[in-house]
Amino acid sequence: MAGVLADVPALPLHEAGKYVAGAYVVLFALVLIYVAIMAIRLSRIERELGELLELAERSDRGAAGVEREPREAEPARAGSTTA
Amino acid sequence: MYGKGLRALSISTVAVMTAALALVFFYAPLEAEQGFLQKIFYVHVPLAIVALGGFVAGGIMAIQHLRTRDPRWDMRSYVAIHMGLIFGLGALITGSIWAKGSWGHWWVWDEPTLVSFLIVFLLYATYQPLRFAIEDPERQARYASVFAVTAGAFVPLNFIAVRMSTAYVHPRVLGGTSNLPGPMALTFAVSLIAIALLYVTLYKYELTAKHARAQLRALRRRLLGEDAAARPVRRGRSAAPASLHPAAMMTARARAEDGI
Image (cartoon, rainbow over all chains, first blue to last red; front, side, top):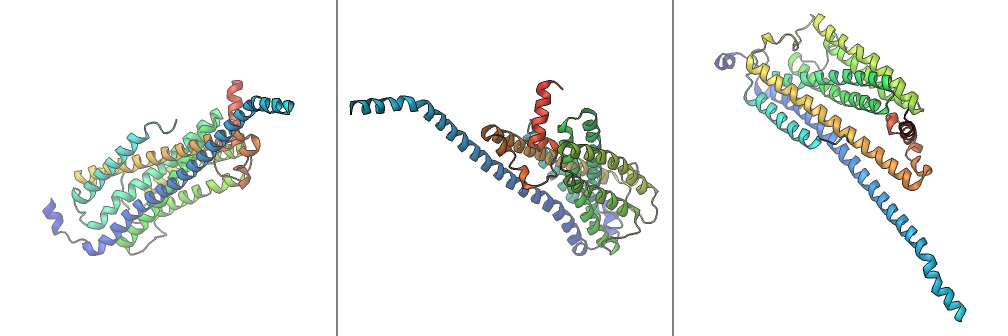
């Protein structure tokens, strides 16, 4: 079978090769472009997640500050009364 | 949620694609008439079949959305059609390259297969502008689903047109593989599985990314309140599915909480 097919005239490799390579490059280019887009999206999600984490930490610190405030204020008030 | 099993799916996709490429270039015999050029067949035809399959799947998911009004089905339908468009573009480009090598022309207008596929592709190319044109997320999802169902029903016409066309000798694949030698049929089957796996993998990646983004918005809303949540929407109208809009997500969540 392979011998028969080998004898059959076909498009020479140097001529057909560029078209075949082109078709497969298109497939890989599409996948590559898609992966690149996904990478950009992932970095955006990562950045937004970082922002939110920072925000959550800041709000936690703020909440802790509000809780601490009355206790911290006490010595100050005591100081002012002694002054 | 959507990312479950993605790692195994990605690995199997890479493995099957590698096997398909090995079969194409080292196992499948050269075709008698076209020789090496016929190798394009193993990438072009699976891309076209999977793209059309994606459009039909998008239509089926849209039916589910219309039945249940669950925004997740709209998102799935949107992503299925979106991926179908990418694969359809690949089929068009690889087909053009094959036509140039085989017939000497990039495009042949009197070939029913090519023209009908282009019509289906252009029909679906209007899907995103349609979504973009409607501001209300719920109405956008409903109209998009109706479009997806109608266009999905149109897709089989493409297959019928291919079967009825006799102008040129366009390769017949489904239902006519008897003229395909065993090694070629096997190579084609593996290539089809590889491209289908690629579609499913990218589909899941897209869904996972969109879901992660939606969760981030929900988190931002929770941390910053309503004003911050509305920030991404202020950029303008969006073609993204309703389930990704913070407002729609809130509605969906409220409905779920109310047991609607």
